[in-house]
Image 1 (cartoon, one colour):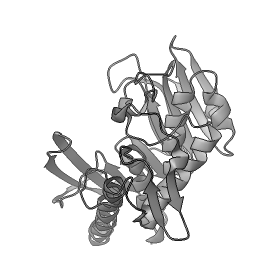
Image 2 (spheres, one colour; image 1 turned 135 degrees about the vertical axis):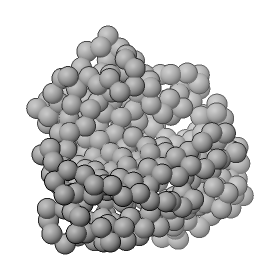
Image 3 (tube, rainbow, N blue to C red; image 1 turned 180 degrees about the horizontal axis):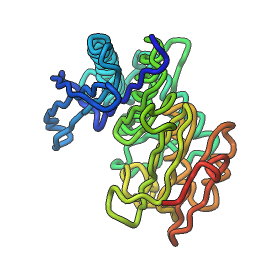
Length: 318
């Protein structure tokens, strides 16, 4: 495939039941293909939607459509393997077998749990994926991951794990891998706020994303960041609030407004953003600096913007 192709994918909140398409002309003889589908989840109690847009040369219309179908098919399968909102997913089976027996899992859940355990150890246990609604102090060492047998066993029957938030970053990374394996080099993926970029926006140059100002309405940014073949994930008072509670007191424990992490891998960026936010002002930047290639944009309660690593040059205040 020619290297000048540009592919943009927007995957908002992930729930897959199929898709329909529309095709319209774009500038510079590019076509924009968009898919939208809505579904209702009784367990979550709200509508979930997914949208996807691709920009590509007019001559590649058929190839673009085939790429969309294949990537959707792959990501859909991974979603149903991971989401705790799906009854037969690996995560749901692990939760049902809590306190009973080890549960066989696939490589997708294993990869997420490897990242979780790594950051759990690096933060002294202040980061985990235990359902906070249980209001229960849990040691992640009691959630046993056996990579040789590919099983997970939760010792306590009252403990449940949640991977939905980290799953979005993982899906973004898997979608990027799928596209690159098919020869695409220029694309932007947004999976429910987890952004993964590759190459450049051929109409505008480098991919530029905006970091939300936590004190202002959604859509108002505090700075802009240029992405060069990496991902960005944000955790804060306006994003994924259920992930930031103290296990004992069940209240927000961070003195930060938000943390955005830029990293080559979308799953790790997602996990680092959550962990750094929970570390608070005294530990967020130190945690990010422990990962080679990681950059950060930290917004403190008083509104002060702190950058970590190369983000100091990449973050242009709006």
